[in-house]
Image (cartoon, rainbow, N blue to C red; front, side, top):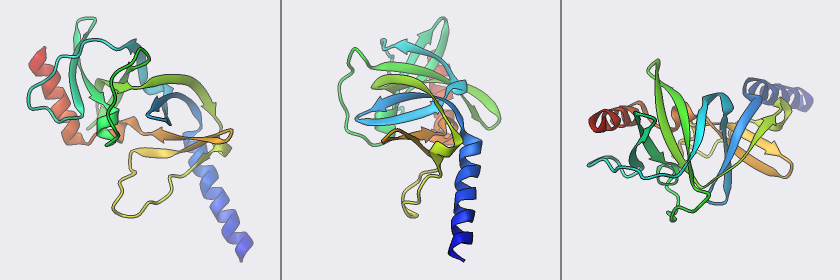
Length: 176
């Protein structure tokens, strides 16, 4: 009986890993490493002046002009309720394309430091553990194991709610 339960658990982990295996851009927020699917990344740009948007939620730093297109910029540290720190020479913006209500949305996410692109195999990805009903982990696709380290694999489409994405879109349209 125990062997059957272990086999079912191993099959579930493998299924999650099979779905999530692939290339991830990894980056730091504080001392923690995160990864997002490389196919969601449009480009990585140096930190630049961000124009604040009045009455925007605190995790929205504002908007930038990227080659003539105004895009909203989200501060992941604030979104994840992490301690704030000043921007450094390694702070940058990852420009991503997300899906919201079936529509593509371009936005920037401010991170502390880009690390590397990793190819994470299925056997090295586990399902997100349950932390109880009070902690929302819907935006974490899985946990990647690389050596002795773990990397939170983010579903960038779910980091922001649909309502928050609408606020971002209005903010960038208002500044256009």
